[in-house]
Image 1 (cartoon, rainbow, N blue to C red):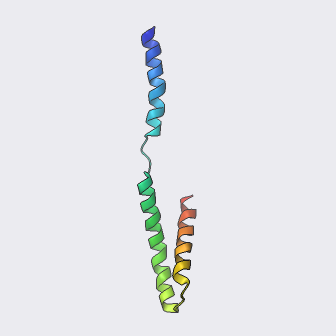
Image 2 (image 1 turned 90 degrees about the vertical axis):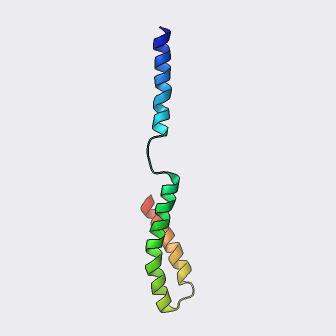
Image 3 (image 1 turned 30 degrees about the horizontal axis):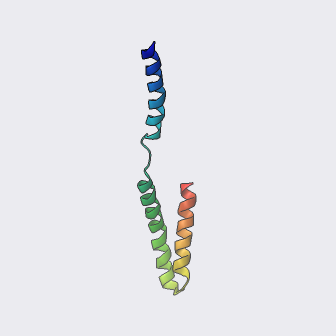
Length: 74
C-alpha cells in the first residue's frame, strides 16, 4: 500500500518538474534574437539617414527597430 502511495506522490511531483524544465527558448536566446532583429532593421535605416543628414534619424531608427521587433515577438 505504501509503495502505491509513494509511487503516486513521486509521479505527481516529477511530472510538473519535467514540464517546467522542458526545452524551450532560453532567455539568452530570446535576447540574442531580439538583438539580431534590431540590427537587421537598424542598418538599412541608418544608411538612409546618412544620405539625408538628419540628426534625429539615428535615434528614431533605433526606437522604430525596437518597437518593430517587440511587436514581432509578441
